[in-house]
Image (cartoon, rainbow, N blue to C red; front, side):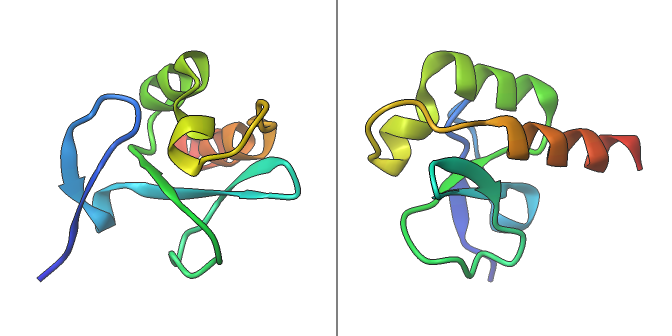
Amino acid sequence: MDSVRTCVACRKRASRTELLRVVVHEGRLVADDRAVLPGRGAWVHPTARCLDRAVSRGSFPRALRVSGKPDAGPIENRLKTLMDN
């Protein structure tokens, strides 16, 4: 059975396979496709809408328990690549 996680943006619950795990690495938000990177992870739907909402509301720093605002560039670029394919 697949575990259920909550999207940090829309707060909807979904299985891990439907969500993208995001972690902070060297001050940047990075996608953790295989959910194996160390540290706290935040889960978000891999859509521009949920990503934009999470970034604008400051959901990632709160969920990941980091101070400041991590650079969302890498995760935004990654999402654009996913949506283009």
